[in-house]
Length: 394
Image (cartoon, helix red, strand yellow):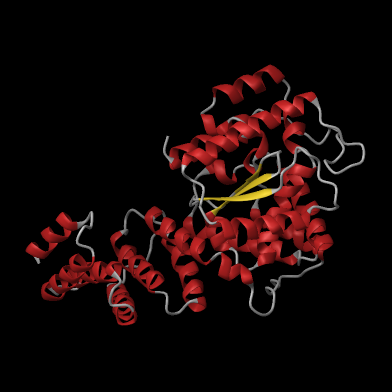
């Protein structure tokens, strides 16, 4: 099963189950770090499902391979644990997954998965801490077990997690998409407490949620399984503002150089590639603007932004929301790739994009030159036959 089908099955399975769950606030259990904590038999079954799910995710090919990034995020997660006592069954660890959806989810075992697109929307360490704190509350509060116990028909619960597509087996009780609004609000509220306790700025949770809200508005996100169980973002933000005593202002990020931007550099660019492929061009352009402000000489980002300008016209009619038609976008795109070539004449992707843009601007001679340079740099390119056809037709 490919990564996209895997995640579709997973998130859809969450919603199928979530629709049948009752509120879990009435299920009383001590926190995982409480002195009265003990591992229960049915909790062992949930943990076993979590272990199976982890194995499937790791084998699926969707995990983003960046040990330094994983270690950085894991360090933040561990710093949020409220004391020095971590139960043996909880192994705090963060893994990053390649996905265009802005989401994160925690398994009851303490492993937290954060989608690459979620990281790309973040601007600092404290925003990362806000997501990890929210997810850690699900682990501390044992929400997966509480949801399972609150299901009216226990047999139906276990049958459903067995018959759903493989990736959805434990996700139905461990992901934020499967929790009630009340539980999500609790995770926000207690997550803010964890951030304060650990020295992070809790206002950054609001700043990050505002970025998610803008993403939803810009891309007209229509996958209901991603945000269906979340409290409305406006209500969520308003509630946090009240709790933190804030007005309408947004919190500034940490002053000085933030190592977050350095350690997430590669994954932010990869997320932009995914957004471009998915046609989420407004978000891709916004994040690329930020990225190029941080790394103004990055030719890969320039070429990717040029693709956004080019596709903004080509995608007209396929885009979810109407976008302005502006032929000058081709000119802007060409300026970007020309600059990229000036910086690095060996960047094959810049020459390929330059060839496409020269064709769009009715410059066949310029297109042939660009494509020939591309093939000289990438003689074994999988695009070779396609490019040769373009050269012959130019």
